[in-house]
Image (tube, rainbow, N blue to C red; front, side):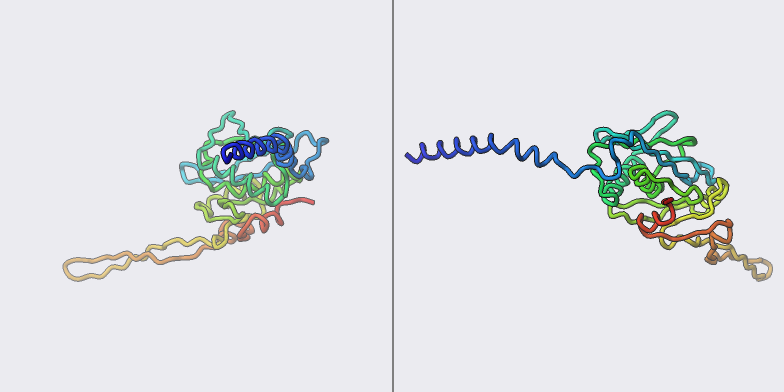
Amino acid sequence: MNQKFFLLAILGLLVLGFIYFPYFITSETKIVPVVNFSEEIQKSVAEIYVPAVNEKGEGVATILRVEAIPGEGRVLVDIHQLLFWVDTQYSIQIAKSVAQKLTGLNLSKIDLIYSIETNASIIEGPSAGAALTIATIAALENKSLNESVIITGTINPDGSIGPVGGILAKAQAGKQVGAKLFLVPKGQGTQVTYKPIRKCEEIRPITYCTIKYLPEKISISKDVGIDVIEVSNIEDALKYFLVE
């Protein structure tokens, strides 16, 4: 008797499952419609200068381009003359996630295409994370970016911007392409260098010399001739980038 009751209960659950399963699927797929990216917008493009440091230690800047088009929620990379390193790919994924949180958009129906104009091989590592995020947000919201502003910094999942190297060289690269404002991670508006101080003492018949390295702070803004502002997260940076 108990076995018969048990089988009937299982059968009942299966019947309920077939009845309500389509409902759950439908509820799950009915996500909030995409905001600010209507069907009338077939393609939205954002471009931003990305400062970097080449293998010679020189600052260079190249254009990062992000396209948002109706699609299937894919992240695509234009591989023409381009090599995206693994850590850069990781930064792109974080940039997409942060952009989705800040814009409130449903990206399941949007494809994002990333490409770099020239000098692609130098855009590696996580230091382009902040720029990737800014450009992604601009593309999703179909907004223009202020061309006189550049940024460097890593991107974290919570939207905060982390420290990077080569700040001085990147500032010089930004000025060369006409940038007026350079956004850097918190605490990196000045750069510490070590100045050698040589001191010699003669103890006959030998002269002894010692070298001490004293820390010296360099203001990037004064040294390069470009305004520098420290930002701690993407929301702070957006205030300087978005053109109304």
